[in-house]
Image (cartoon, rainbow, N blue to C red; front, top):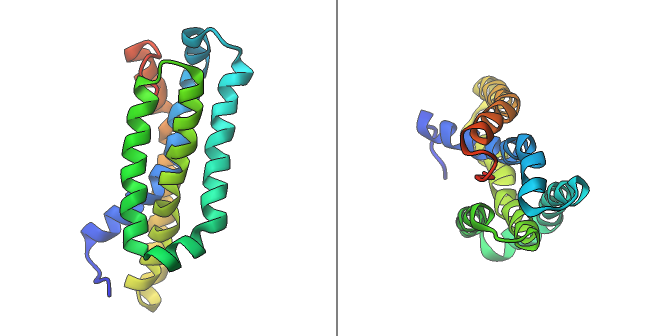
Amino acid sequence: MLKYTSNLVFLLVLMQSVTFAVSSLYLPSLPKISEYFAISKVQVQFTLSLYFLGLFVFTLFSNAIMSRCGEMRTLFVGCFLFIIASIFCVFSEGVLWLKIAFFLLAVGVGPMAILSRAFLGRISKDIRRSVMGTVYLSATLISSMAAPVIGGFISFLYGGNLFL
């Protein structure tokens, strides 16, 4: 049983925010990425489509995966896959590797998105649940709005060579 702590709530909000921030951080760098790989902007946008496809695939099969492997194990594997895929995104030498890395990135983010909401429901009771849900949703929306600004700043600093 999960016990309520402010650190746990912060971690759950962070896990949920990562899901939406990943795609938003990436958006300002799309033109630079197309120049870097000398490909069309449509091909670069396809990497973003693969991210959402990976998120969809994990969400579709998430219940079966978590029932079979367990929630915590699925979460740890997802976090590990997220870290590895992020590294592959940064060091990808071709657009094919970037597409594969973005798909795996989404599959790694999937458990964080699903389980953060489930864990939040387990640790909160009645009135506190609505307050925590409001904080949770507000932080997710703020991170979604701030991510393109942060992504643009990173793109400006590194000239678009650092994708995430």
